[in-house]
Image (cartoon, rainbow, N blue to C red):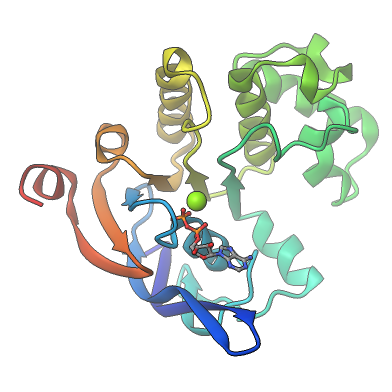
Length: 238
Ligand code: ADP
Ligand code: MG
């Protein structure tokens, strides 16, 4: 198994005496090079699960593992640096997830910069990854607002991929995009997955989108898994 969670919980304290059980004991395992689709209605805990799994939220309880290695419940700065090399996330909204004051070079190259990569090498690798996601190196000096939603999502994909992670949480990567370009972005992710041997947790609110890319599918409802199995089984006999 590349990724495993056991009874993972993330509760939010939302007022003095109210606790929201956003993720309430989710156990899953994802094998190397597998795509697990995670489906559920809005507010069911999909994003919170993905973020807690890769350490963007401190978990409330339960366990998480990367290649059998226990992940800390609370990531230190060093843990973030270490694990962000292995696990990355592509966010739902390409409008809010890219810093409007940073150039594309700085956005895509950020993960290399914090690791001390020399500027010239960052430029070369950013140029390479922009091409790889269907953009071009002239886009480096521009700002996010100069691009369409689909292009911004490609920039977000390049930012995640430049680190060469093994595991990527794709959090509804196409739901904010025009229907006409959704398939292009799905195809890009599928092609990257095939050629780089990635393992994906592919989050969607709609079964039909993930069924083409997922080997297995899990359904989450109110923070709990209600079903998990091979894609065709979950899709045709839910
Ligand atoms: P989904 O991605 O399935 O739409 P989320 O994981 O975003 O669902 O949210 C699950 C629940 O947790 C929702 O009720 C949401 O309002 C709540 N939630 C998410 N993030 C936070 C947070 N940082 N603080 C408090 N509540 C949150
Ligand atoms: Mg979400």
